[in-house]
Length: 478
Ligand code: G3H
Image (cartoon, rainbow, N blue to C red; front, side, top):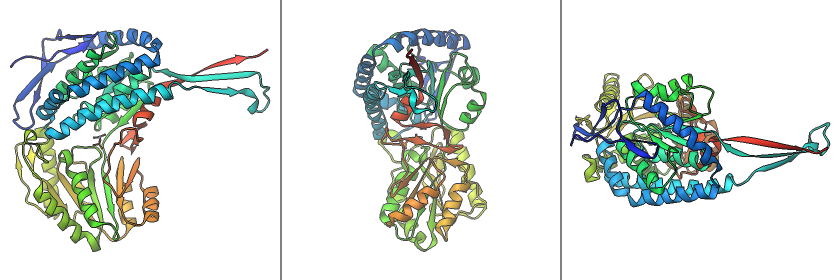
């Protein structure tokens, strides 16, 4: 209706002085759904200044009070799950039910963060000097965790609410202030989520949310001298950010090419169910999606058949109807996926289904007999397309997994727990799931990528720790 959603700064909703806006295109209708402010660099400067001032007072706010406000925000977020989920449906074509789960999961994450924070930040350490050679017991070192300052949070389009609060919660409980730059697709859902924090009554300037074009404010934000920590989830941009960022702690979760290694003794029904869930939920637009199946030749036909039977039952269509497969986020993403499909076709992959696309909607497709010379063997489609590579030994599977430049998660299916552990040890990924598809949750589990998949570890506890620094005071006795 021509309205432009305001950005959030200094505790209020503002229109940008730029007079410009950024359009958010609904992936299903491919028409402009919403508009957000195109913030200027000057506005970013003001937000950074306010964040710095607010943080000083917040760091002195008792831990229990910080936790209380977070619990309040979590409850408000859950109360508003319907309108926020509706934005997720319109902006990123997330299936209706999954959109609701994302908001509920986010509320739970914030509550858990508040509880975890009061415990781990409520503890310090005392060291005595005489354990180190040459010292008497005349020095007492008291150390505790202090905030970093201003945390810049940049979540991706696929979880604009959940991957925002997984940064906001830990930052705030630890005494930091927070500047959020939401993804364009998902910005309105993120603004609604920020409003829940506003309603909870956090101090002015402590949380802000700037929207706009990456070309105008992207580098400006990540290279801003006022930023003391960057928590980013997304694609290759993260690699560019880490090259340009200053001397600040970085938490990066970038892409993945999660492998699913299937051994001959696996429960094949369990395998098929997890391949479909892992590879195709949210149309494969998850960093932890199963992105390549490495399966022993002797059981490959049976598993492919079971997976195909399940794929035939998936509902394909609009997110409003709670379809399983919904339009991918942008036309350029659909074009990229199509490029991978065409490359596989030219190079002789077996198409288990006919390739079908209407606008941004791509029907689920399993590509069998994929070989390493095909792009789909290595690249991340972020769409409902899954390659199967047949292997003749477990070593071959591990080798393919480790030859990837990514190393987020992976999974192995076998009834032999000893083999599973050995394979897990051999896989160069941040997490290996035994007999289940990769997933980030439960959200207090450590979550990290090796190689190009990231820097640092996430999960609630690790994120809180990452957003703090150790501070020591040493008492010297005469
Ligand atoms: O897209 C990246 C997310 O961190 C994956 O989260 O495993 O809960 O879908 P998920």
